Image (cartoon, rainbow, N blue to C red; front, top):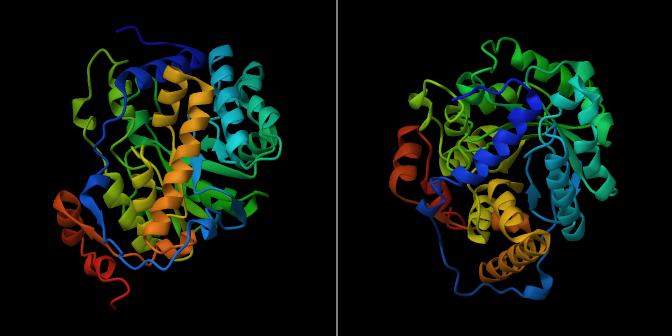
Length: 356
């Protein structure tokens, strides 16, 4: 296997490999059962999909999560289309890591295009945990971002042939940026999940949210292994499933918002995530797949369908707001139930909501 030497080439490889690899569909969300409510006392006309992440007010619980940028015209076109879909459906959107544009100004437009096409929307800038305070400000200013995502991708970097090998000081850099940056900071995983311990550490900073990025969607260990001459197969199944990670994060979060992502591809996955405790739900791989295979109009139509489905399910559950969803009882089964109980999490507190 030939190892690519340029960051631009690597960005394009990631997109191509993500599309060919597809989604794992191992998020664990099918091991969550919503408890039906036969007397919902609700009306579809009264349902609101508005939610919030700290000071950020969102009209939809869905946001388009970080995917790409820095890969020349191809990634510029992807980000333009994603931004148009976000604008048409009034969604928040995150760009991919901007380090490539910080190091090469010729790549700036692949990110700036998002603000151009979504001028009044909520946009998240994005950098890795190696970023400095100066770089964080540059990333935010580049796209007039409303918040900054700092991504944690240790497993991807270790598997990446040309990746980082030192991760010292990340928490302190996150702490400083969250204290000094003029916009809110969100810390996200990239497909390997966050456990209770990680969220506990992050609570000591001034971040507003964690995005769990659970195992079960696009697998960046497998993607990077495709680019290696000698495979690190031990990382291919490494991580915390989305269903488990979301519960662990919610148990640890306190005042920090929790965002769900990682193999979430259906409206019922979104609703389950919101019931567990997520403030919003990020989608990336499934969004990219629809855009690539069917085009922007089909993507907009699918997002509209997601919104309709969510509203119908909220009505069936007797909920007019996202906050009310978090009182709905749910039952964990299978591996998810076993994991949570082994970790000392009281699953009955979720299944007996409204009875306690």
